[in-house]
Length: 341
Image (cartoon, rainbow, N blue to C red; front, side, top):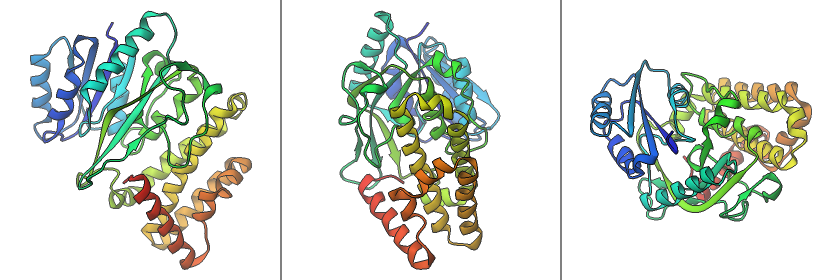
């Protein structure tokens, strides 16, 4: 069995996948790389096959019909032989020196008999055109360099959240929780770092800048214009997260800190959905925003009150054109500060 499986979803990634794969190959024989060619029409498949040919004990290539990012991650989870599991997108890469530190901690966890459900590390926004890159750290919210539980988790500030880039899960946990991401849908990475949390008991945080998250490629899914054009998929993921909270209400009651974190994360996703609909600006967009908030209210009134009447919920629901302008400006300030999109 390998220590770590890294799945690399690839779709028409010929121009940048090499940088990603080369950075991950430095993990050596402890790591299994599963390159999932998601129905690419360029040279992605040939490049992937060449890596498998050169590194047969490390690289496994799976070719499949196009099904989207979630579909590629599902295939990676199904075929993973590693004790731990991570997703690295094909336009991102990892810092090799920090990679070695993370592998050492995973080895220790695997060897001492303690169950480690989730390892968290920092990620760096490698934003095109920016001289200084923003780092997402968790040092004030999480204990460092030790196994801890939800009881020891402190307060996450607004804009500080655990993304797919931050986490390595225990592979068996992902299978036990029955995680299955929707196909042909963008933004399912939010589900990947949301639904398994209910099963996470033991965590470990390393204050290292491991994952490099590239932002700035034309047509990238987090580009604001692209997100508005795919707003129905953002809303779909948003509603799945609401449903998950409601369906697991009783289980969440016993763990206040986990529930608070999940509600706060859902608040951020709902804020993003709302402001993108405001930015869309058409009557249809504004109607979809009303429908989203109505959906949450009908599903769970208490959850609705918490989301709607918090700082973010209030700022996204100011009345009239003037209110919408204020909402957008508030979002712009957050964008500049946190450097997302």
